[in-house]
Image (cartoon, rainbow, N blue to C red; front, top):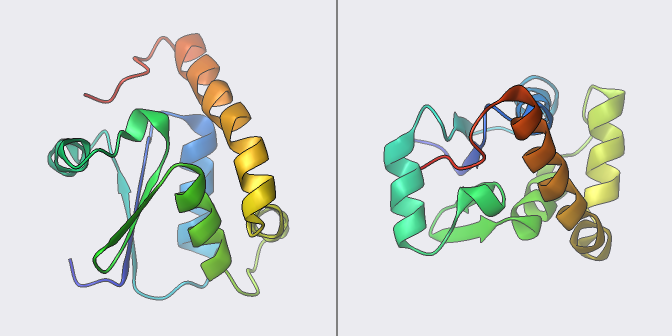
Length: 126
């Protein structure tokens, strides 16, 4: 991958999928690769072997640095400057704060789990 940032998410989660779509279409972040973990099991397995479980949160790779869960969301939102969409602007403003991200993140993980169960989809990618 010839990108500065790689964002790995769960494409079956409607919240994760919509956020990834907003990142791709409206974030104005250059050099980002956005990967659905369900379609890229090799990278998910590689991350799991390094201790990063995508079932517990998205993963952001920036060069040699790996951010996971709340930290990944906080870091990616910190990269968003002047997004073109109002929802992404709201989300990036909320999650640029590491305190707010850490406070809200457990609720996001729970919402993901309920959404996947209601769709009849496994909550585990591997």
